[in-house]
Image (cartoon, rainbow, N blue to C red; front, side, top):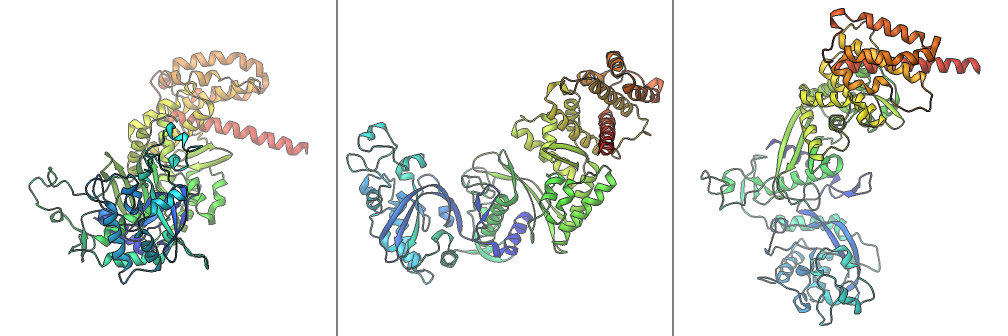
Length: 627
């Protein structure tokens, strides 16, 4: 229950955000929903005058709308008649639905709907807008007005057209707009209502805080029996029906459900679901609404699996699945550090620690960090796959260690170079390629998360997958291989610890030295080739074989270098000399065909980086002399 309690406390701590529309970068809207409210895609908007008459109507496409909701309507399915209190499908809100050919099963939905709306409108909590909408709908002429307004359409028998067919082209010049926004017949159209005033601009009904409060107070007055809430420990009105639409408006999966009374849910241990655990209506509503808000605001969803991290009093917490560039970009005071070139673990650790201190200062001393992973195996059931609640000091300490040990220099962002740990999604890229199935990616991200927040070792199969792909550059494009290589170096560095991008000439490790040899051979050949010659060097082409049989393959590579050494002449003397120095540093007994470990990639990257950096410095110096 701890995750429910923390979500409930998050809702309470962010009461100022309730009912306020926020926007993502892609302009999609979301909000922290009020209690007893949910969202629904509306197709038609109907405007009612203040005195309860029809004003106008429009097809609005599929627009996500905040609507009042009861326990029954929020969990209705099949033929069950459970109307939403205000906005709903045409079959519920239209009193003339049957008169225009609408088909119903047991009871007429409108009867239940209009009685519920009447109770709200005539209660002490009803307001003028609810009364205006009730007055109009009670006239039972909605479909008649919508047909007149050319929003809905009838066939030759004056009945509602079901699905659109070419035979109706004789009646209408073109396909009506309503059939482009609904998947079934017109009876499936969802209607939202608004109140129009000629004297003033009124707040839209679905965005009106007074409407929210009106229904919340009305519905609270209708709540049933009280029971002990296992989340808060208080005796409050309880509920057995809990929210769906957690990940998106079409999501039917629930985190809490106990409706299988005839199956094997209780297995003889209990006779009623509330004997297992009872949750109050208020806690359920607030916790689920907070979860929806956090997912829309900052959650990552991959193949319907949600990765979410937040703090109760301040949702803005560094995401353990992101790389430092993304984290720094969200923290404006130190955003400039994102462009710095930091090549040592110690310097980077200090820079990153400074940024984390900025985050920590925004949180209270009692703040804890919540990490949650959700997924559903079926359309109706969702599960918590992973949940951790950590002390903020411990969380930031673990985050700092991850970003100072799983570290390397990366250039795969266009025009940006940064040093740090790769995002977990990019580790999946390195291990399985950019076209990996999302199920594989989300599985890897879930496995990597404990490595960040619990300081676990990266699973060896992930390291091997990255190593094998990085050792086979001919199987991918250059940009893809370069990205795979730097990410693999970061992963291996986390496993080995203590290596830096800066070349360590004192490192006498066999695999590291073999990697340096390969890098020098690659750079030597590249310098001998023309600048517009983009073919791979022999060192790159033989890289996979080199990783498995280094001594034998090096003989082949060195023989292929001779023409390029001759072409460079004196200009290649330093590189040839360097090859001799590195090769002689390898112990005689170690110069064999034993397969190389991932350390050779670290040596390869660092040596190549050092040579390219040295060349850039010489070029810059020459330009300064010329100027």
